Picture 1 (cartoon, one colour):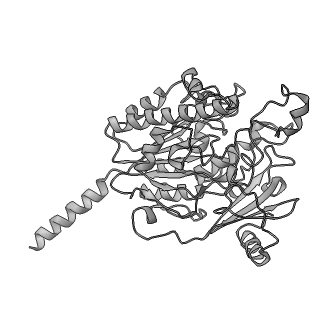
Picture 2 (picture 1 turned 30 degrees about the horizontal axis):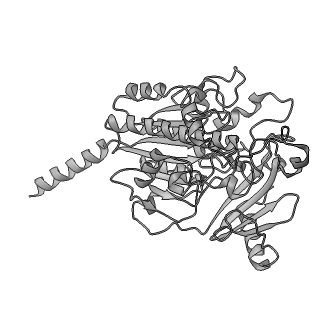
Length: 429
């Protein structure tokens, strides 16, 4: 009897040790509003492949990025650190500085692919990538080897999605039986908004601004590429042992109207920003800039459904590392979402999430404190925005999702409490 028990224990140990770690696929939308998906209730944009993924996933509709700007947001996804921790807080260095001045920043911190490589993973970078050679982020393989073409969004890497998906398929074939990580971050639906003609015709209906129609077409085109990627993974038998995570790097509200061609007498009615996006979207502290749905699919492990917890992209690194059998570094403050979506506990042990907004390009040096424009905190239904040089703003984002009614004077005690919470998190210095 004792020998049988020992043999059973040995077999169980061997199965555990030999168990294959899950593949990881990170799908990152680029400049897309948290509302602009079928599964989030948009009435016009069709995203059938992401809708199917949402049905098969744990869906967090109250997801956020700390910073509503591409480069720092992507760095947070990759590291699980806030921008004031990993120091990549802006897209561009100060005027006149060599772009290489920012290259060492990511090499100095732990990243998901760098940590997974130690556990035997191969990893592949595609799409948006500001950090020079893919190995600067710890990837073993990648499409971006340099930015010498002048395209700082990712050089040759941004061909993924818009032009081809083949490099990902080739990488999966080459990995064989090794577990892999794929960074699928196409420059979509990011500008240029140039969807296929078939999609533009679909959305260019009478009465809809053509700029909006182009953006809608880009959202569906991106969705089609996601469908291609997931279908390939499923066809090759990787579905059940692949952790798929979807998130957007930041929000987007399409600016409409053309100031230059509009008649003179209506020009004052056109709101113009420094880009083709509205004021409360990208690079702003409003939900139009920092909110994103987060999807997590892992068949047989994750319970599909809608989870109302407040979550942040700082949670993705600890979730991925834990799924792959690794302990997250101590400096990572995020939560392991698997604790909730596998049924171990009903809710995350938090009531607030935090964020920080910076200039697009550094003003005077790369230190976060020198480039900070806003701090913000979402606490239960409330959102406090603390600008560096203008009055505080307080919104109930459940009752007022577009943040129109500033209630800061009506709830002074709550404001005081949230300011203290912000200072306890990071005082901006």
